[in-house]
Image 1 (tube, one colour):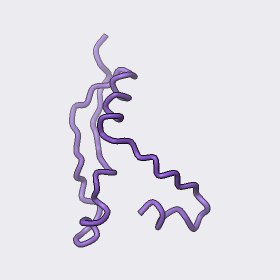
Image 2: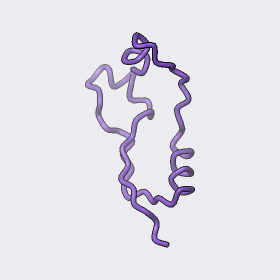
Image 3: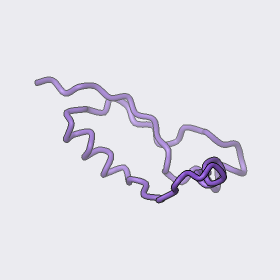
Length: 67
């Protein structure tokens, strides 16, 4: 979907998506805690979801870690 939405606009597509573990480490490094993590957000209907829902999207509720 990145290509479909961006390639014809000349947007660079490096395809360097972070895995969940890297996101969680990054949040931790900047002092954020995850309140909720939703890896399946239903952006696409069937059958498109079978192709495009591959763990590349998520929604997270974050909060600042108490000092």
